[in-house]
Length: 433
Ligand code: AMO
Image 1 (cartoon, rainbow, N blue to C red):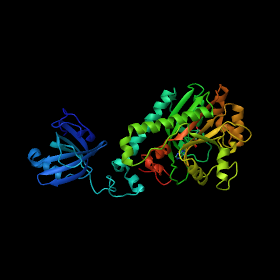
Image 2: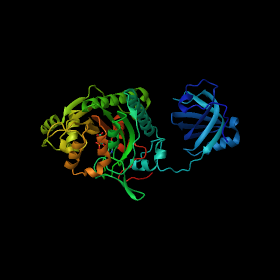
Image 3: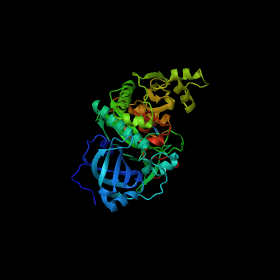
Image 4: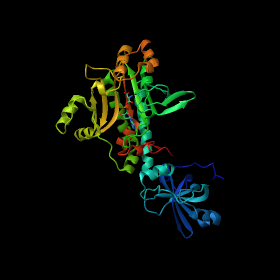
């Protein structure tokens, strides 16, 4: 049985702005119950915040009053009542209930306290993620994530990009074979996509400028705070752009994300007690060679080495905000990145402090060069025949990048563990829920 549908449902947060006497329906979960003689105060939370409900025995009658008194926390209720001024501190308006319906009765005890008053480890919280999300701090992260995704899409639409969806079950590796999840696909071998790399490049032949937001899979046994086995990537690829053009696009995307979160998530930022990153445009751009020079002042490192966490930590102390490291050694970049000269490639990474957020570059657009690069990297061109053929159909020069959305969320929400920014994270130890 539902309460009277002819009345409007208000979100909990709206109640305090309603005028006295407004008839309102409120739905949500019970956070607290305080019986006080002939009155019972119920705090109901929904995704917007809290509302106070007052049950008066004389108004709702014995049966409903008992129902209210005996409610278990986290149960879902629906209340119909009139808005009145409240005598409680910090609660300007409350609902004096006329009807109360229990839509779902919870069954305590609970594995975690979703009000956050009692500390639970991240592991315990992730085991009970559905309940954990009732914690306003946790919910704030995903409300911000929503803004970030929306902002990204808007930027790309404004820049004239087309949103695409490429396959996630693939027959050939896109990023080399080392970290592929294998699966059986009827009689054939298949893999979960590590990235949309080859597809997005091919799409520049026709759609010219594309972007995709999707999940990708890496079978890496890395138990770090910034790696997961399933991550969300924002990928873009554009014909007739070079590496510096697409760095500008990355900067625009990140800048708009921060501005949009600032505008739309003031409440969530407050709940999380974080400061949004300072954003100064243009982002600093240092070459790999310059980065090595800087590092040499602090540690022993040779030109040509890939930058390890310890190196990135040093750079992160020098460059605290967003910055690019461009033109990396060819030997440590994937086969599809175009060469600049004998030693260097037209590649870049977007960093935030020590954290790599994105990597990309200008791509090889000749079939012969791509074959050479595959062989150099000990990959078999035969495995890439479908992709190589596309280059014979006329491939425009093109560039692009892939950005870890979960990592960007770490930066925006001030979390140091990537698992906090993913609803149901997958890592080498976690496959459920
Ligand atoms: P790359 O492998 O550097 O490049 O990935 C791009 C970005 O994706 C994020 N990322 C991850 N995030 C969480 N967990 C992981 N295991 C993980 N792996 C990657 C990072 C990283 O910067 N095809 C190229 C991109 C391109 O050139 O367009 C690629 O996949 O933030």
